[in-house]
Length: 198
Image 1: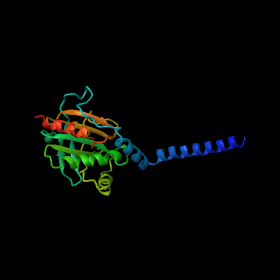
Image 2: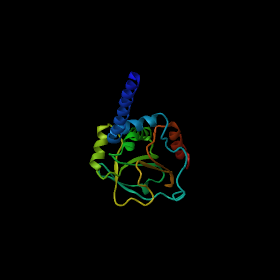
Image 3: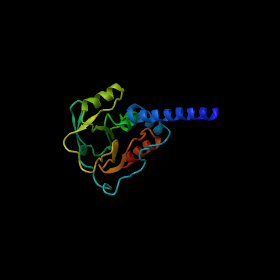
Image 4: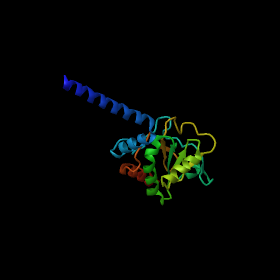
């Protein structure tokens, strides 16, 4: 009888610990970021390594997107033909977005001096100042952009983060919804293959 009481007490303690952990996961965005980051590092949440888009977007030119940088410069993505373009739609409050941002920053630094690659993190949060502050506080060297005007139809779904990749002809060749580790060597090889196509 004494052993049964001890077992029941430990079961209760374990139950309450599990419930407390679940509560922390539901409430704390930072804990979600840490868990997603860990999952990315062990090989889950891989970015695309081949041309993958849904049939509706396949082999069509990417839409023109007008962006404003933190320093006020305007960039029209239609004028970036001849470059491999990676647009990452994200928001400051989004744990998966925050989890993948170190790898986006590393990708940006990897290709920073290559004039044929553009990495464009696009804030869809609606609070551009917070996004700029997020980049500074975390020491990211990424530029940050916001959409000017309307988002072209079909470019982004309701899911963030969403990353869209354009080839040098301006055609959408891949689209990934959800967090991913963009430091994956297979992903760098994929970008390098896109760069080698004339």
